[in-house]
Image (cartoon, rainbow, N blue to C red; front, side, top):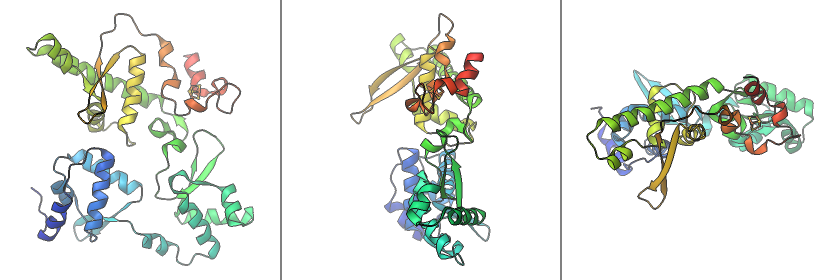
Length: 318
Ligand code: SF4
């Protein structure tokens, strides 16, 4: 068992509650960092939230580091996580001129949605050439970064270097540098289905009555999400909603069925099970639109349109 100092144990006990989701776990880690400003290590997280396994802890900490909410510092042989403070940015801005600080401030306010160069010019009142020059300087100092928007090829927004862009800009887990990761979606599709097939096979092995066997073959999206996370096949952080999107494609393919059951807190929980298909699935249900994040903005003759969609063209050629 990992060791925790007496002082830290008191703080830990105060905020010891069971995280219910990845977001909840991240919030608890931030709360813990606030309570122990000198920094926390994995042992403290483990003792505070013993119900979370190592994978969940690593994923939560990595996400907070990538969002720029935590700093990783080394003291002697120890690695500690500390809340990132505004001081770090102000240190980096030392020596910057007024324009750099002004533009940095505007970009900071835009959070994870970022801000267009055009809006920076309008809000700052600076000439475009000056804005461009300042943005280049801030980029070279790694204080800000430019992010291409998935739903508009030429649209670029600026945000702070450590901020993780909103999913609406990047397209979420299914896009990498504006390219649809069809191979990745296929692999996830196969693994989610495999998991449900295994559940189905295990439920049939047991000496259970038919209804219990059927119930044992179902899995919730959270169970499937945990399985996928443990496989470690994704370089990006997947949310339970991403798995539900994949499950929808499997349902359209006729490989999986779902039902809803009471969740215990008044809400309803969707659970899934593999079905043995009696006829081969139609390619029609495998269109890229099924997992397309800009599906709602896609219309004929619009900027995003099926007639100029590369993924649709590839799918039709296939
Ligand atoms: S046709 Fe439209 S909805 Fe379908 S994949 Fe292309 S952009 Fe997305």
